[in-house]
Length: 114
Image 1 (cartoon, rainbow, N blue to C red):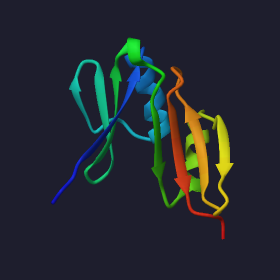
Image 2 (image 1 turned 135 degrees about the vertical axis):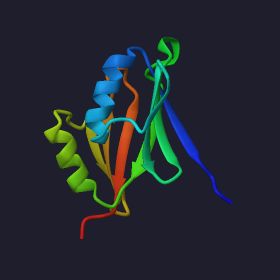
Image 3 (image 1 turned 180 degrees about the vertical axis):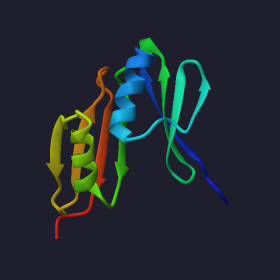
């Protein structure tokens, strides 16, 4: 059985959010379903999308686990976006949190440091 995941984030300013997420994710969207929505394929069958929904903007909360956390954070910083915060859990798992202009939280989690 194949399962596709579409995780959405409501934004108030589509064009501004589009530019911000392109810098955060390091690429242009994979496709545009309509004039106020953009979709990135993070991995096979796993998508993150933004949609202009001003009345709901700022309430999103997503974490994406990656095996290259340090390199990803460095790349995002090179694009001009700095983390809002960083966390390390008791088991050593790390999370770096970003907030878009509306306040939506996008976290990148990674394995403990060796």
